[in-house]
Length: 252
Image (cartoon, rainbow, N blue to C red; front, side, top):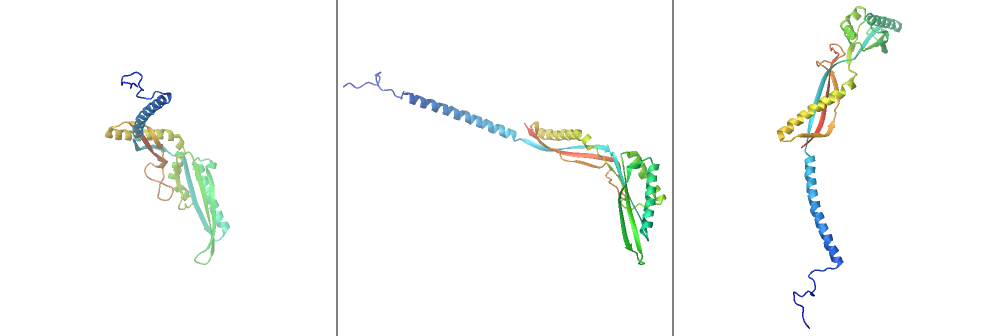
């Protein structure tokens, strides 16, 4: 029996050639290609993730001077007498004097309203019973100039016999905060970006989009550091609005 030579065309092939083997080889090739592509994409994704994590957190400040648009003056006064009727009559006289004071200054009658009354009874050092009636009246006005004039002339109330108690004083408020909020938030954001750009310049990067931002809260204070209302403390209508924002910028 003749043995086939190595170059005999009838010799068995070195690799399997059936359909199942060909499918196996094709699947292995696809799997290998997928692993290579997946590794590349994973590495590229990690690079992008590291770039996305680069950010800087800064604060932005905006301040604006404003004039108050509401004046509030709570006037406290009292009267003491041996009987309640006399004490009440004295307080009623003071109330009439206060109304006349503001009427003479040109305030509408509705701007002045009673806001509280208190009656107390006690025994003095001589053992006599006495009554004290305390009254509060409040002026609320949007006429700031006229309100300032009233404060300057408040000693006229004393001349009319009204004794002002501690806690009687004018306060001013700025109520139109919503009218300045948008512009101030924009200004604070610009200030924050300027700080971020300086940081980026020092670190050899550039500033991208905003990643996260917190507005903060608005604060209204006296422009010149005074506050007020009570004795010896003078409030003014000149206020300062302040807001601090916290902004996180991407770096690229």
